[in-house]
Image (cartoon, rainbow, N blue to C red; front, side, top):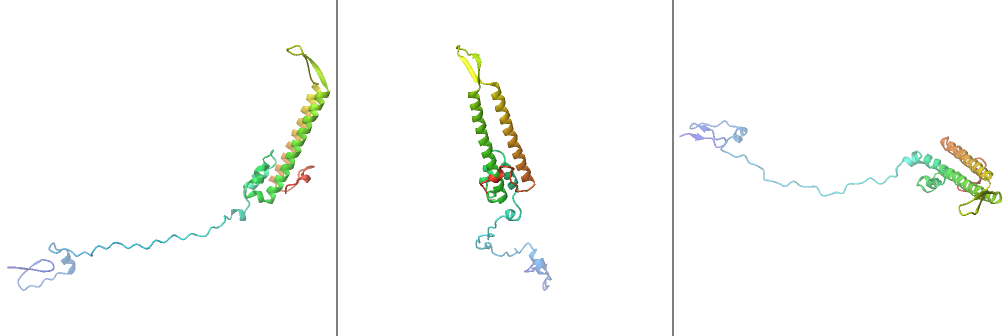
Length: 192
């Protein structure tokens, strides 16, 4: 009867020693390899990620905003100076405030002259009237003389030309990065 090796299960002759190695012993079908008992992986305790402290964006401190020039140009276009007056953070910029002040005075002068021309045209129209004939119901139609309309048109064209001139001067000052007052009316600016 033959003997078997206890480690690898190889048949042995009587009084024969097995020359098996542990690597060979693990490959035998007679022995099952031993496994370590199952252990649940350990989790590290929850740590909240550290956040860097909030830092103010450096774009305003290092370089002026691109909106500054846009708000300065808008200051000369009608009442759009309100955008530069209330837009944050540019509303505190001294250049924007200067151009907003110039735009405010330009709007006030334009509106004031428009009202004066309208009143003057109305007065001239009521003074210089002419008969245009009879209307539908036989009543006499009276209206302003034709030259009043021509004078009114010329005055409003002059006002529009003046506004366009000041608009172009103001926008050129913004483009050239100058804080130069508008001619004649710029010195009356009260918003600074």
